[in-house]
Image 1 (cartoon, rainbow, N blue to C red):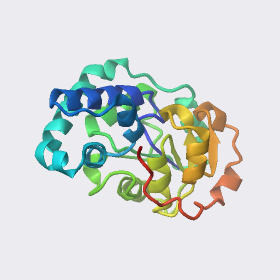
Image 2 (spheres, rainbow, N blue to C red):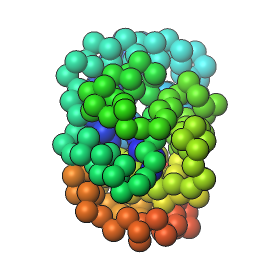
Image 3 (cartoon, rainbow, N blue to C red):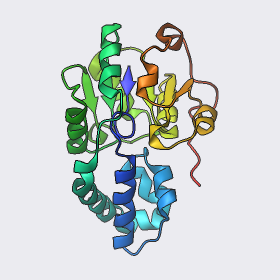
Image 4 (tube, rainbow, N blue to C red):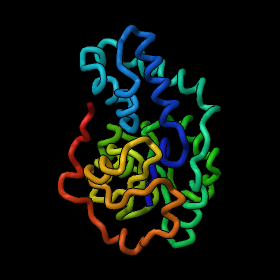
Length: 226
């Protein structure tokens, strides 16, 4: 079982959106907050170009990522675990699943998130942006987590359309949860095999059936940004 971290285990989507928005503002680049939010879940190596264009990425990409990282550091103490996060991880382990985490975040941010949820002793692997050539929706981060956990196949749980595409590109079904701000229809149309309001709703899911599920055609496509 591969779980995303930001927006899935911890309620950090809007802190990330605010940190990115402030980074763009500090460099005189106007990207509306709602558009920033829609890109959260995509890795920082992709986000700047996707929102502001390749010219901005070439000129300011590294500086923007540095500003975002510092901005999120200033907000990280506001982040809390999402309801049911620790309970679901424990329930999955008790059912015999090997659980690993695959995050597009920075290692320090991901470590803090795992500490907040209190599941460090329950997960077999944790991978971050530092362990992948390309971030979500590329499958690299999830594939690294799967390999480190010693698995051959997986079910993915994530909160964004980027998680759905990333899972599909490694042949894995993805369960979408609404805690990142994406709607039910968006997650279903992206290819999520199940959509739930939050992790607490998954404790009693039909995991045998989900383990047999496959990503639908088109789920591997790049998610649309507004």
